[in-house]
Picture: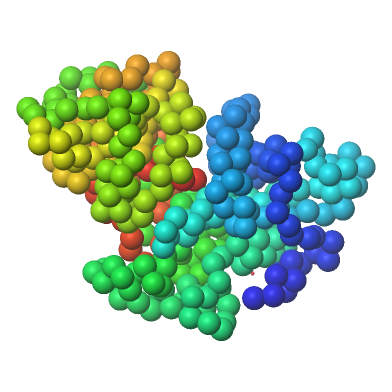
Length: 348
Ligand SMILES: CC(C)(COP(=O)(O)OP(=O)(O)OC[C@H]1O[C@@H](n2cnc3c(N)ncnc32)[C@H](O)[C@@H]1OP(=O)(O)O)[C@@H](O)C(=O)NCCC(=O)NCCS
């Protein structure tokens, strides 16, 4: 696809961000989300950008070739804090490639610049190139779409690759834009928030199952194996980022030493990711995570609709559904979301 075809405005150009422009990307994110949330009567609270800036910095390190900003020549007073004096960041897109799964982490365009093809142009330039030779990125998605749903042939899955993302159910433009590439919204993800009033309703860890903090061992190899079995791909660099951002991880070990899963919580109240080989451990593991780390405020978890055990456990513990669900979309199935809770909507 020729990006110029989609650019609409002649003055827009696309390039990797300079590190100082991450702050401008955060401002674009805030304006874009606040704009549609305000129209729904739910404007965003005052911005607190530290977690987003840490994530953007992480993704600029892991996926520099999949991080683009859309810039236009600045008119006086429009260039952001981090911008090159002569340019204004008006949109940005980033994808994280983890083994065979390409995950669109962020795509945002300033409200005043939307519906002119900038989002489309950013997306088309960060999509993976066709594995089978000629054609466009959209063609790559088409190959994925035509592959049989639920195929158990994992080597074929790995060869073809998967495109995936999370969108907000309240925002049809993004869902419609991605679905054109076959990244069709297929599963709701609910934000459960609150102070668990009744953690005691959750069962304790079964006898013989031990929770071990990551700091006491290097569980990387076991975690990679669990991620491949549950999420479909390993992503050790993201685990490192989560731990550096204040999340505390535990592995859950059987008495013979076998690692059955892992889970994260944090003092900031952010829960996840949680990945379990055995779904019957869901409620006990969530109960352990809730009591092991005392958050300063509310606990917040993203729960896929397929993970009915986590939904039931966290609702019974006293959390409530907040806002509209997000939608997880993909070109081909890749994860066992009945046994997984993502870290966030921007990084599974
Ligand atoms: C989503 C977003 C990045 C798109 O950027 P944009 O520059 O406005 O998008 P474009 O003009 O390139 O393309 C718009 C496309 O959205 C799709 N679209 C818009 N409204 C739609 C609807 N109601 N139903 C289906 N598709 C729709 C169409 O494919 C449309 O392309 P077309 O006009 O050629 O048919 C931008 O609107 C935005 O930042 N929105 C708010 C934040 C957000 O939701 N970001 C995504 C988070 S996952």
